[in-house]
Structures are given as structure tokens and as C-alpha cells.
Image (cartoon, rainbow, N blue to C red; front, side, top):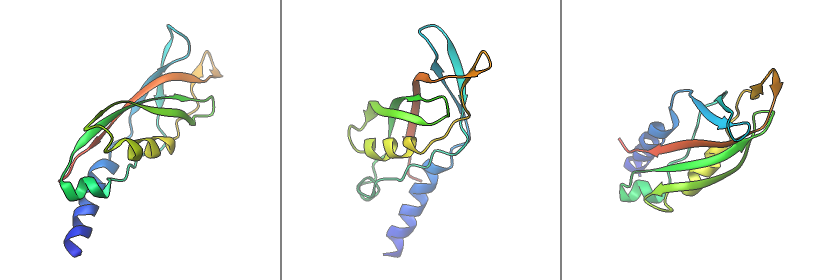
Length: 121
């Protein structure tokens, strides 16, 4: 049992300690702006993937409202399919961004894309 707990903890640390980063989205069809995260992406490594030693990644798209909250995340691509989707969506929903500004006004942003990588040590 101790070995499983250690493996789970080490797998969790790999995906949870990403640096703060910036993503980009669109105010309209042509205007691209940078978004700045205010918290870390903290996905939980699925237990089944740990047991089977599976690594992978998920590409998500979502919108951000004028207050910096994530809206409507969905999976664009996942490898392997279906293993990490739920954990990625759950983690992305908890992200908070600085309110996106365009021309000194808070605006909603569309089509933000983010890749979540799951890697075992």
C-alpha cells in the first residue's frame, strides 16, 4: 500500500507543478490578446492511469469571461483518448485569469487553447 501512495504522490506532483503561464484568446475574429493565469493548473492524475503506467496529454479549448473565469471547456484532442479528459476539464474549470483587458475595458475572450501533460516519474 505504501508503494501505491508514493507512486500516486509522485505522479500528482509532475502534473501539478507547472509554472504560471500565459495563454492567448480572441476578443473578436482578428484581435488576439494574452491572458495571465492567477493560479496553478492542478490536475489529479487518474488512478487507473497510474496503475497501468499510462502517460498522455489533452488539448482543451474554452472561453474566459470578463472577470477571468473559465467557461465551457471541451477536449479538442487527447492522447490516449478518454483517459485524461475528465481530470483535465475538472482542473481547467478551476483556473482563474486576470480580467482580460482590451482598450482599457474588461472583455470576454474566446477560443483559449491549453495543453495539459500527464507524465509519470
